[in-house]
Length: 261
Length: 231
Image (cartoon, rainbow over all chains, first blue to last red; front, side, top):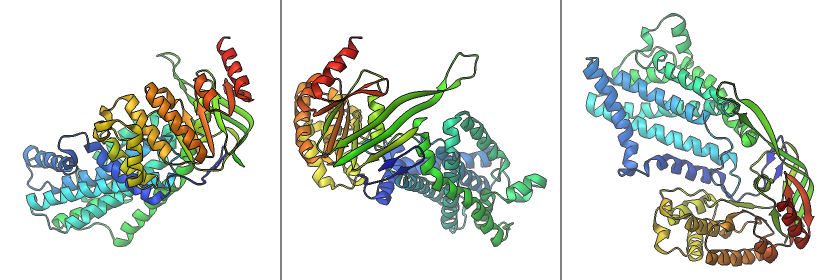
């Protein structure tokens, strides 16, 4: 191992299998928040189920509508984007999860992806199952919602990591961003469909991955017209893949620099 | 054979200092370590001594590859275990046995070999199967120390860990360390225990304000350490 101000060149490490260690750690992080509860891992299903139930109640009882699936899909797709973004942005870069040995960066990234993708899949499968049984949504939603949520999770995780070093140095940034994420609940296509938007708002939404994913799921759920071409949908995801990949790739250097902050 | 080589290493911490409730915090930089040159050969047992705030923990952390130097270069020629505090990454809701099962996999070791060895060393009875959060600090220290030493690193860095536990644990841990030193390339112990240094160390490094003020003979190191304490 060679260490200098600009780089850390790894040598032999006791954490021998990077990918396997990352998968173990990711699975452990995914289950850890539920271990202290009496119902244990059942909360992995109960959490999204109750959340979806609350939003369905909001739409059916409070708003008096009979089709709450638009809101449920909107909320779950946005939460799988914003949740990982926020968690990655606030990641403690200097933290060593296994303090006996310097933990290489690759398992940390693999762990983060594993944890967030598993969460996205559980959340979306539970929501999709509820939509199918409670509202008669076509069963293809069982396939489409997890794929859409997983893609958004990947983008959220990578772009969040891109901001993490700035948050480390200027912690206040995370406050501003958390309010921006709250605002995004109201300006993105969660409470309303893309077809109801106009002007600059519509133009901005046109280039956001959440809009593409949520409208795809809504098309499958209740047969609305998909407002985008396939080429545009792919292009938007590819554009957002650039900051996502950059976030993953640069993480090692950012993490190294942040160890003395 | 040189296992650790240090050239012009300096390290500083950045952060924010609150001045008063009505003023914005100011950015500060604190220089914690400044070492011109040092080499550690295979087979050496080095005691790192110095009073609180001298830079002992920072020094060991940087040797473990966890801290970015401000200047200089550090070369480490072997696998490192850095035992600091009593928790080697345990999950509080899992028992030591469950923790060791998954941590062994992370470290690329076979749980069926590691678990019996640590259970035997820790000797904490039924507590080995209780959630870790219900264990005392001393019990956790036994398990953590047992696990860290069962990994067979080439360089072992120990930061004050032998301070936890009762006299029987200390005796057991010391004996395990001696046994381990036969297999391990380098051991560096940060400690305030003069007895431990006399018993184990082959070389002492005394730090003051992040700088090495003595590097060499054990008895000379101990008298310098006592002298800076009485200043």
